[in-house]
Length: 316
Image 1 (cartoon, rainbow, N blue to C red):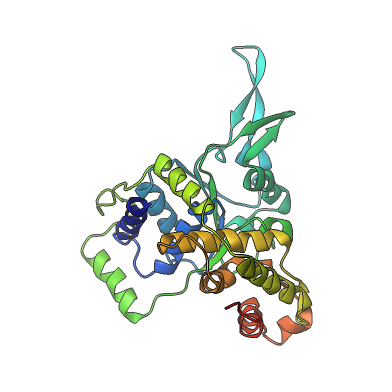
Image 2: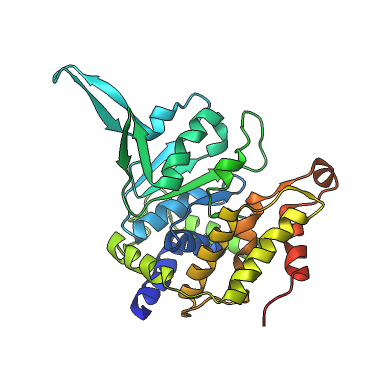
């Protein structure tokens, strides 16, 4: 276990060779991989969302495919479709880009709900059903979707069923002055974000080691008091006067899984309330649907969750 944890520390070092100042997002992606969940990356253009996913996949030796979500994208363009092979004289299934370890769904909110829904089965069941036949997806499997929070023209709001399938929603901020200087300094020295080989990014782990780490995370313990604390946090979101739709039971299991992964990365074999609190915002923020009057007043999901964390009794 200690060797695996050290290897994940080296992953951060390798990612830092091409991505500067997004340590929280790197940690979030590692937690999602360890907890076998999916990630929604939100940020304005140019904050290295795509570069971050590409670099991480390189360090973990994962097969990666990218789909640019557009208004004319069809479900079959993502999952695959049945086509007629004239040479063989029969129909065959041709796999779509979802058949990979790490799927980068770029600007997922630019495609209609019909195409967005093509990922629902893949994200939850790790399989694709086409022409009456179910086909398993490779393991490990993670969807890293990006969206722009500023530009809404030509976009479609992700439905609650889609959002609930993302383990984490990570918000990538515009870097501060010192970090932006480091980015510019690297580019002045010849750094090319399209050439990870020149940046010196090398593989650290492989899928087998990642799956071994995932098995260790599953075995991380949780006391009844901490489990009750997670339930109380979820129930508090449902009772908040500013919330139209609170956290679902899937959200409580997601918070538990993410807390286990964070505890494992910190070298512990059981989660504590501190781990739950650290994971509460990224795990729960996208699962809250606010009332219109709360949105008009400028209330955010993060504000509500922060207040709930202060009010709900923490087990000793």
